[in-house]
Amino acid sequence: MENASKALLMAAGVLIGILVLSLAVYLFITFGASAREVNNRIEESKLTQFNAQFNVYEGRTDVTIYDIISLGNLAKENNEYYKDYRYFEREYKIRITVRFENNKSIIEMVGNKDNHGFINDYSKVDEDGKIKSLFSCTKVGYHENGRIEKLIFKENQ
Image (cartoon, rainbow, N blue to C red; front, side):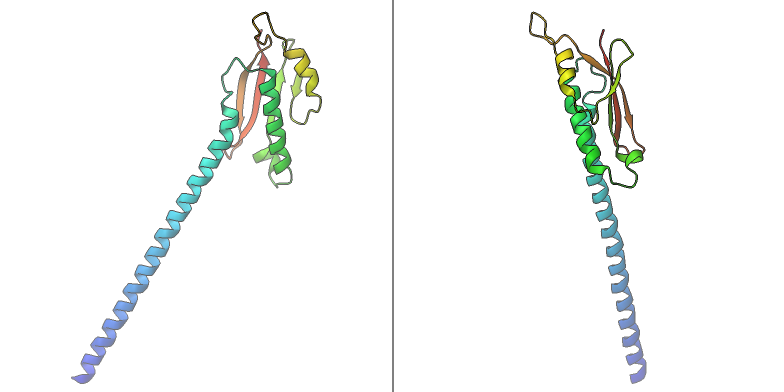
């Protein structure tokens, strides 16, 4: 009788141990999934915040040459930062392109060092102090990973 009670105590101890281990594994999996979900939300938030710098121009028809040059500098800064990444061209490169009124001049602003010529040519003001040359954002493109890839501007006529 004494051996049977010891066997029952041992079996109960083993069952309690299994329950504790099962609970530990369950908590580990649950917290791991929560951490992954939080990390995904943070990455998504960063992507949205990054793209917002460019998306604000989507569909606008009142973009100035100063805005375009600022975007070009932002894109250039991004491209310099990511240029050594393995999938730079496919996932990180940003292009800002401007098509001028005569449709012959297509200028990619990224990496262009002579922005003063653009400013002089396209920042003329009228009698009311408004800039005459305005541009429209005609196209916005995205990489497969959701990052902004290109913005194309066309001079308003």
